[in-house]
Every structure is written in structure tokens, then in C-alpha cells.
Length: 595
Image 1 (cartoon, rainbow, N blue to C red):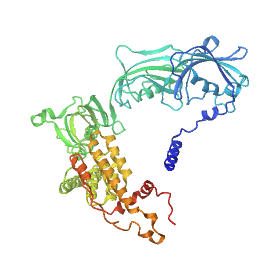
Image 2: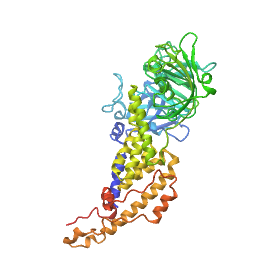
Image 3: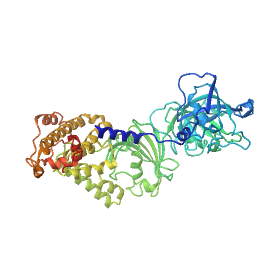
């Protein structure tokens, strides 16, 4: 127990939050250096915490009542409240301690000694010459509001407060087309821009049509979200939305993101553009077609001439108006066509403008498409089938499928489509099914290596997690196996039956091996020195067969287990050795010394 407690203590220390610069400053506070008097009570029960944005008015006076500095216009200030983020902004120590004691709307007077305001040694906040930083001062604070904010720029020039959550998680990016209601107020509350009626404001993201800070903020929003985006003058760039920014130090933009159209510059040079015309089903990009998916589409191909001449339409030219089917990753359609359909959701309609080198200059060209022609496709992705599930295939079927993939890779290589060929040669199913074969013939460590190749590309690949877990279990790496089976359930709820059956088998394997080990080491320390080498020598190469409960646990769920074949018999020591240290700890032998 002492070892366990010591490990837990070390873990707690590792997770302990590092000491911040503000924490170091707080430790230097002398007793009695900060006092608070309540002038007007606030509302509610919550007080600001680290990470909250605070908006407040501040008036600084000497002890005899002379105003030194103020944000309030009646005392010579500009009337604009201060905005700061606790734990991020540079704040004098007295207020750093005082803000967390205040409620929203509260007005309080803090009596602060010099070492807790601008007279603090190495104070992070500077003041002009002549400021009485060596005097005790009164700070009258009105906490107008506080809230959680998202820090968008590290210099705190752009912050976002979410008023109402949006839907999904896709966010605008260059060059999406965005529709929104937008209004802007200066720090003192004066409206300087408003577009909240009529047609929504439409702009193209990344084209400098709105201030840079506002664009950065909108880039963190989801469809339907409402937010306030706080932008300082450094990020208020001139643009069609705000042609004049003279005399404006900050703008608080109220934004409702109504809609955005996904527009993707697929190559990054403006030549291959995909524009979504109708939303599809699911979430982008998780529900887009994978490599080796079978896609069913309708499309209309047009030339980019004055008439938009149609050179092919599946709804007109195909027999019985059937959709076009192709398997991704096999070079069966122009490269630009496949690149864009791989970015679509089922049910989506998209318009694609494609340059000739990604259209028909490197692909069999229809007779009515001139050499070097730019083309436009209107594509509807009806649905798609994911790559074939090989669970339950026998060895011959697996090898036939492997040969087919290699054959496709060879064809692509001869056609000069080297990237597609490379993808075929590195096909994850090859590694996955190689892992299954290695598992069956007892090459467990090689099976783990094959699974790792799949998981490097896709850490949530359920079958690879399962097969690696089975291989780990076969060599006695029980903790690694348990982690893989648990991860299966976390990434795919439908695999719970499979994973639970594997965990049951794992538990019984553990219990069985620990029990055998106890029997082998029983009486070990009763031996004389000359007899120690004989301890456990008997029956070391024997291994008990699975008991009835083990067999029942596997058979009950054989419909769910992905090839849950029992591994070939191995010796107890070969299966026990990887976890020897853990096992000795379990047996209480980790602190024993043999003399």
C-alpha cells in the first residue's frame, strides 16, 4: 500500500498546476496592505475567476480625496470602461486580489499600500512621471460585468464572448461565403455600425472585406452562434464595412452567424475551387468518403465558355438515367473530380471549377472537350459505401483481395499515377489483415507492429485496436491490451459487445496466470540456498487448457468477436515474462531480496 500511495502522490504532484507569475507576486503581499469597503452591493453569488474578462470603471484618489486618474468622464476620463482578463492581462496586485471578491454591479473602495499598486517592485504596469506611486491610494471600482471569453489573439487584441451556442463544429475559413447580422459599438456604448435588418451582410472570408479582428473572431464561430467580439484598434483595419476608423480605439461587435457556404481552394492556388450549393448529411469532414469508398454520383459537366456548353449529364446521357459509380483511389475519374467529391457529404450538391491539368488533359478526354479546356462540374453525391469489411474472410479470400489491391497499384503505377499507387501499396487493410494472419500463426509481436502501422494513420481504427489488444494479451501485456479494448468502446459504441467479451477473456487470462505463478512460487522462500534454483522448475512448460467459463465467454459472443481465435499454445514463462515486474508486485515480492 505504501508503494501505491507514493505513486498516487507523485501523480498528484505532476498534475499540480504550475505556479504563475501572479501567484509569485501574491506570496510577497504583506499583511494589512489591502483593505476593502463596500459602497454599493452587487447582484448574484458568482465572482470573477481566472480566465474571466472583467469590465470596470476605476477612479484613483489620494487619501485626502484628490483624483489622480479615472476612466469616468466626470473626472476627466474618456468614459470608456477598462477591459482585462484575469490571469492574462497586466494588473496591479491590489486589484488582482480585489476583483475575485466582487459581485457583478458592485462598487467598492480599496485602500492600497504602494507595494500593492504601482509602487510594487518590478510592477508589470507602468505609470507616467509624477504619478504618486509611493503613496497609499484609494481605488474606487465599479465592476460592470464579467464573463468567460475566448482569447483569439495572444496580445488580447481580439476576444470573443459567446452569447448563444451554434450548431455543429464547422467554422468559416478562406474563401467561404458568409452571411451574418453585424452591429458595432465603441467602448462607451455608442453605435458606430449596424446591419441587423433587411438582407444579411454577405462577405467572402479572407478577402479583407471586414476588419481583421472581426474576421478572426467570426472564424471561431459555428452556424447559428451569437457572440460579442471585442476588437482593439490594432485589429481595426480599414475595409468596406468600416471605411473610416479615425479616433476609434476599440469596437465591440455583436454578431449572429446566420449561414456560410463552404468554398474550398483545393489546391491553394485558386485554380481548383469547390463551392457547396446544398448542404449534405452529417458532419464535415468525419462523414466524407474515405479512401477506397464506392461513390454514387450524378454530375453535369460543362465547358467554361459563354454558353456553358454541357458535354455530359448523367441524368440525360446515362442508360435509364442511372447515377455514375466509381471507387475512390483507383484513378477512374479526373483527379480534380475525385479530390472534390472526397470533400463532400452524402446528399450534398457542389459546383467545381477545374483547370485542365486536373480535368481531362491527363485523363481520357470526351470528344467534345477541347485540349486545355477549363471545365465546371455540378456534382451531387447521392451516397457512398465505405471500404469493404473483411471480418470473417478466410485466408484465401484475404489473399485474393490483397492481390487485387496490388494489381490496382501496379496499374496506377504504369499510368504514372504514383501517389495513388503508393496509397494502394501502403493500404491499411493489407497491414490489418497481415496482423490477423500473424496473430493466427503466433507471431504476436509482428502482429502488434502491423497494427501500429494502421493506427499511426488512424488512431481510432477499431479492428486494429482489437487485433493489437489480442496480440498484447497473447504475450501477457495485459495493461496495454486493456487500454486497447477500452479505447475501442470510446471511439465506437457499436464495438462494446466485442470489447467487453475481450475484456472478460483478458480478466480470466490474468487470473489464471497469476494463480499459476502463485503455485510456482509457493514455498520459494522456504528453500535452502542450494535449492533456490529448483524453485518453480516443475511443470514450467505446461499450460492448463482454457476452462469451461473461458470457452463459454468466447463462444457466447463469437458473432461479435473479430476472429477471436485462440492463440497457439505457448509456455507460461513466454506469456508471463513481459509483465514480470507487475506480477512480482502483485505477489508482494517486489521488496524481497534473495541472498
